Length: 477
Image (cartoon, rainbow, N blue to C red):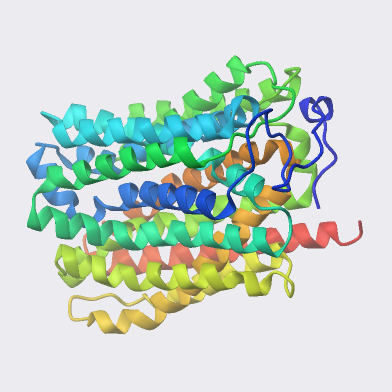
């Protein structure tokens, strides 16, 4: 159930739905191509998650090659999160107002440039800057993705299948990233990892420009500069504080960054409450579906993505696995999540999306609990049952979040809904990584890993309560 439009949403009238079943096609755009759109958007989404997870099994080799210390190693992953979280909502708003195809295609081109810069980087500073730029480009890809798919697929079973396939693309990228990074680094070298990403993105940019059909809201809103600045600065400071806090939470720079992040995000909320045409319409939070979508994405990032991003390092430090072996173990979880997301469409008519969110998080809790008790003599096969259960839960989560992100906002704000959803997910991821690293690095690695597992399970259980509460709030209506 979508909320009643308010603010700028009330001012935006939408043309009758074109043949594709979506509103907001500009004159001369031509008919959308559902299959080709899903292929291009899904492939680019998978590429984004490949780029995020590819460094995980080769962090040590990357840091050594680029002369980066412990802090630099942390920023190899965190830099991408900074670009993503800072610009996702802004990119979604820009896509709705100025063209989803335009923003998406520019994002893929920028991604190719960022990957090429990372491949050719002469030192650690340029490489880390390229990772931040890669995150910004990823935001421009992910934010319009669901809007492009919804425009090409009318409401109904076809859209449900397409959104499930998009959720599977997220899992596919996570599955392929560590394997790709480990194999290419060993066979060709570290720079080839990023060179391959650049070539793939360049090819996808050509396809996007050729295949996709443009769509946008009928009445573009004015730029919300104060909203853009406070959100970007707030998320950047918060994630930077979380990253630097891993080497000491009481240090003044860490405390200043965290405090600035919280204050700037509070300022963002105030700005959005008073500006005439807000980037994020706060009235959406009156709708239980939007609350469930945003809260579920935050919980997924905190409890699942954050923990699983650190799992390769835990497997290497506790079990002593090599990079390729670590990637293979992680592929059990992410590979199952791909299959689960593709089959989640069968739940659409039997279970509300909010209930699917709760079920997915509960399955993730059960599966991740199965990883408790890691020790140097633990055989990797003992982890498989837990990874399979967690993978099923993750696939259900990805598919349900995609559907809720689209259905909980007005049709002409689909990219904004996607941007808000993914912003929450990646802010949660940054916090989840920080908590996992803080818990998993005491004097005894095995004990620390158990503490991280228990924290991830607790976050899953707390996250599962939110969509159930949202569903209970919706029911009397």
